[in-house]
Image (cartoon, rainbow, N blue to C red; front, top):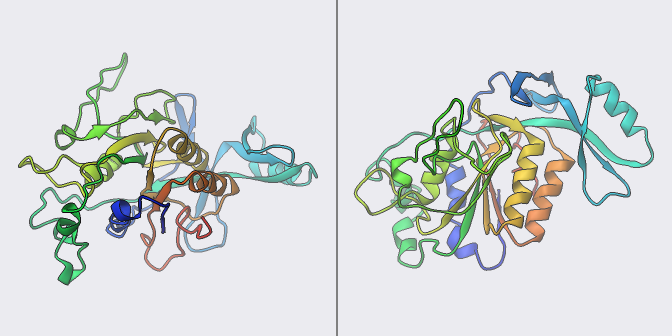
Length: 301
């Protein structure tokens, strides 16, 4: 799905094509965040498709009729289904729903522009005429938020385990500050790899004789980490990442992720960004033969 706001259509209609190149990542065992401890999540089947919709067991999402925005409601050990039934019976509750899990959609790891990135040009075989587009613009002045597993955008050695290094092909890429909703800090580094690949496809350093070319290599990347090292994350974190991007100057939000369940909390975030004039690009069609995943399935924003 491509959502276009006035003034960015010419530059970023190309970014939609990125999502068409992403085969599906099979669903691994989903994990939830409980401080720094991750424990198995509750699983739930919606009967919407053969794809299971899983959710966290530590919180649900609730919006009261007198609130402008929903919030996270801790379960405090209660059964999710029982708590939701109780909340949904409250006339003051507009909606109460599980905090579903979203998953990263995998990208093929092709290291060179020619011939492996043939789809950037080569219009006779389904390419996007990128070289012609680059004569008009490379995306300079636009900010693309990559809401994903983080990005290998900095060399960072925090106290404790885990050191991070900038990906070589992002050494010339422009970055603006982002946020890590998994660790709740301002260093959204990538401990999975998916978000780094997405960022490189969008705005990897180009025309320096190394690695791959970025489709909108003049754009700036805003890294926003909402998926953990296993490639999964809660809808609430995804939604909060969307709102953060919209509030901090993103012109485009890229969501190469999705889940099988609809969510009011997630849809509200998409609507919020759309109403602020942000272009939203979400992956779709990655599970062949299955219904369109969310948030791509929201066609009214």
